[in-house]
Image (cartoon, rainbow, N blue to C red):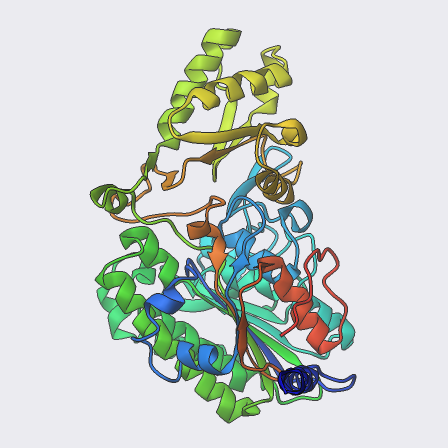
Length: 500
């Protein structure tokens, strides 16, 4: 009897699985990618009982959750996370090596582009942006290629990088908030004038009472998410997404959670409020998709670009390990150490970004120093520095005395033209702390679960209800979506297509 029951159960599971697999020719009307900036995986359970029925709980209770999704590269920062989720690859191939990095020694912001002009604003600082630094294709790029560019792909976010990089190089548009002028803008990379529907939406944004009361950083308001979701819904109408003959894509990123986390960390009323308001935003988006595209006609995934460490003082107050890794002071002490060892009179460290040391190759050469000798002395110093677990010369990481899993993440995050020279891993609970850091806030960037364990939820078209605890990766998102759509994976994809 037990054998018969087991066989019937297996057959039932097989039927459910077969039903979830689309046949050739079947396709959703719309794909929606949602990234929640700085969302730790455990927030799903922490806030589950507080969430309403129509937001995150709808995704969890009716969709599919991969409960052990990890970021499989270093460092774990915003621009890399958004890019890796949509390209299915890592900085080694897609080239977005941080929010800020260097290209052949030249310092760049990830989406800076002085060849374009802002559209919708005269603010060149916030408007001269494009995806030109991105080397690999995204889900949206592959969708556009597959349909001879008939599919529409739109990116929307508070942050420029979070709108631009997910949408890809061939996107129809990306819109982000000009924080100074309180309106959505784009650049001439995409168009020369804002569409009428965007101008109309900006009239609403500019009248937002909450923004009028705030200072420079409107991202500190949980209500910034309401502005983002309203813009995403306006894009559904304005661009008639999901209403044509081909599958369209909408990429939405909520960034207020990151701004609030950096300011006030992972605990407390500010973070609680941010996620309660975000839950309303998710519910509002799902309702709009049901009404405008049709329930069951869209495929949605939700993930994060990275997590966050608990505030060091919070950890210390509760008897837990944690603290400040003061990169600014370490850099100063390192320069003195190198000068004492090698006799140079000019600095040789160009930047310290996301636990990576970018050496000034030109200054080293001009002073007659050997680059490898400078690297060796740098590593010698950093290995003695407080709260450092591992140090590696990127070009010699294969032989460095570090765990294999960490070596693999370091290599996936390394692009020899863009990632600097040396990477540091700090002790658990410690994180980079400088003049920009909030004493009660937090940050991210390391391999540890608090930074690298992120939510991954799928919902809607051809997605059954369920969950899996097996290890999967942020780079598996793109090949999974492409497999469901029966389109080619992005051109540098290293991820695995996941089965529900």
